[in-house]
Length: 312
Image (cartoon, rainbow, N blue to C red):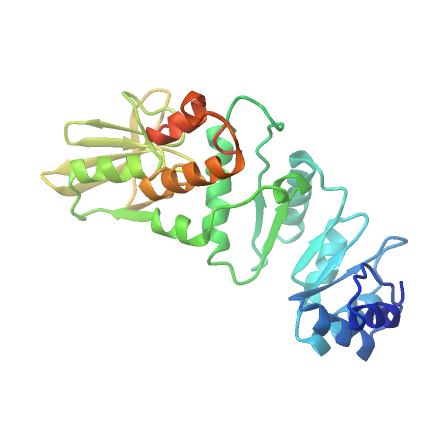
């Protein structure tokens, strides 16, 4: 559908979807303004973007004061680099349908951008199917939370996301920020308060720490495997002060190198505090006409228990 026809339909109060254009024009800018969009996106279904067409996309975006985006049929590292040189912020492609393909693209971009100041981050897929009766692996959730945390502070860079991951809702930035905190040597730490804070943030209390999202308290020693971290840490207290911080091997439980500080991210992608539980129960009753007392998920959330399928 031509741009002018779309504008005429919108002025007449009719719905119109999709338009084709061969060059930037004031009509395109008028259409964008009427639609109340926050970005402009061009498709290239019949061939690769040329330097001229990329410049056209940027020119239309500049005219409208919007963020330029592009959808290309076959994304590769060279195409993305061409777009980045011209400041295009969002690039999507229909072939990135799995986490494996997203990983391949992220690895290629990391290789070609080695030594540059452009960070490349992968937002991993849950690697589960709809209606699976088990939760995503803790290592995957850890990687997702690390990417979400850094996204809030990212000013420029590349985030590779599969189509599947784009279909799910994400936690708000405020939740990630409110449940993230740093610990450093010399900092005061009260064990009981720390235990409550970790449980509230979604960490699980265990006897021995082996995987992400677990912590254990033994006297004046706290072992914890923070989400977003590649290794667990051991916090050694002297009275109420952090005396040492060390990483340790989860298999042998032996302490290794000292560190000056560690960062703790939330233990899960959703809150299970009183407010989060109340929100879930209210929306659950509005959406499902069932006896809630006979629903295991509803009962688990009411008791503050993270059900295996609650992430969905």
